[in-house]
Length: 348
Image (cartoon, helix red, strand yellow):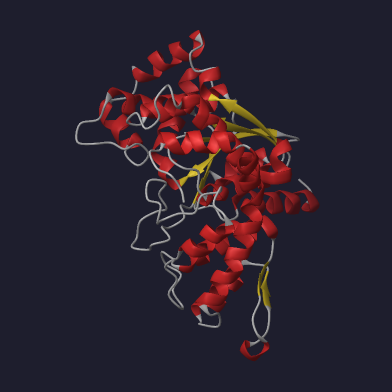
């Protein structure tokens, strides 16, 4: 390979793996990115309210599409029921539609780069079901439990459905013909189990990009959760609600650990826009702009940025980023009202 091609390959790998917690494996990804095109997918089960932390893996999907990849967004509707019946069969269609429109809203103009697929459109076909039987015969209950433990709401005694969940997610890689699978780090045990068995089912073991999980806005060491309304911001929230929620967020001066506000800058805003402007009064140094997460984090850690200034700038960018989704549901209030009814709560 020429020096120029080597440089292009290195640049593509840097872009594809930027912001990721782990890539399995970088060497395989580098080789794949030298091909004219490749397939990748990101899947999510339509369970709880769709919040802005989902933008982290969606941003990575945009990166891969811009590198020449063909992307599929999987709405894993059956998985939403397998996970402790979080979504009933009666709720499945409306929640799937809600998730798809939320994703399209936050993807904005990039939406056209992706195909949207529901798991139920192919997961009952004979070949898929036969592969479930084949894979289930190879995986022990202990390994299936370990694989599912960070993803499903597993209690003391796992249900059969919760052990079926990772088996089907592994098969999704094959049936979506995915060279690359994008997910949060909580998906790691499932996909690593898949790397062991996919070749036995006549498919490549695959490449996996694991993205970080946004901390709870409340702090305390937990991840952002759809089940805790104080820990997240929904993509359908009004600017007023975004401001109210973000203004209360955990954001101690000079502290990056478990700080959802600074993580939003590094993992969501900068990857999407390439820059982050913090407006400030002249007596406090005037406006300051960052084009890299490393520079922003260094300045914050050294107490060169005030938390309230950062929050204000984050609020502004989130309102901008989430506006298309909010506008869609403002013009389709029946969908949002029905979804909120199925969640058993009403948003003020």
